[in-house]
Amino acid sequence: MRFRIDLKIFIFLILFYFTKQIEIYGYIMFFAFIHELGHLICGMILGMKPEKLEIMPFGLSVSFKIKADEYNKKVKKGNLFEIKKIIVATAGPIINLLLIFIINNLELDITKSLIMIYSNLLLFIFNLLPIYPLDGGRIIRGILHIKFGKRKSEKYTNIISLISVVIFTSLASILILYMENISIFLISIYLWYLVINENKKYKKREEIYKRILENNTI
Image 1 (spheres, helix red, strand yellow):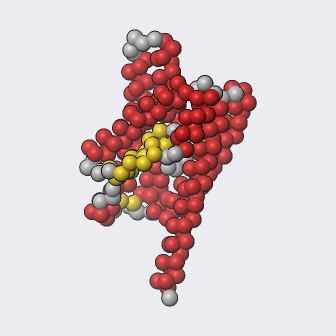
Image 2 (image 1 turned 30 degrees about the vertical axis):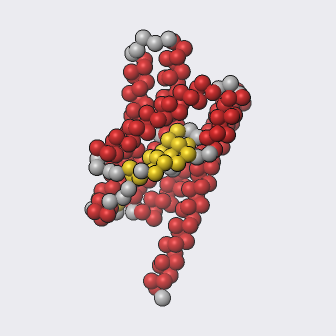
């Protein structure tokens, strides 16, 4: 399994340190690791082989190898692998919900308990945003893939992600104004980075599809 660190994490570490929010960021990264373990364990239970683990500014990301036989087993216009990816994508947020329940029932210091519950709630909400490649975006893309096929699922997911990040940024602007919390601002920037990056990848894939179609019609 390959391992990679997104170097932007160090920029976030410096910003959170100087804004005196490094403790909450540390909790978020710790529970993000447990969140990702949920994805990893769920994938391995389903017979999927992990391919790459990446440490990102707001958590971790694990990807799995594609088995040709699973990809060829069709479920409507999708494949068996898509169903497994949907299940794996839901595993992480479920782990955060379980952690909230467990922490809430432990006799811990009230301040630490609230910070840990807040961290897991933030991870749960953040990861279920309908923005690819977050868990929510992966779930939507998998469902759309099964319903409409690969190309349309990518197109629709790209549109949904863009609309979602615009709505999130609008709401975040209001929260930043009243709460004066830099973490919300950083999350907004990071989400825009994800959407713009995925949009570039989508356009490149579309260009390749068009070239293949043009070559087949000649």
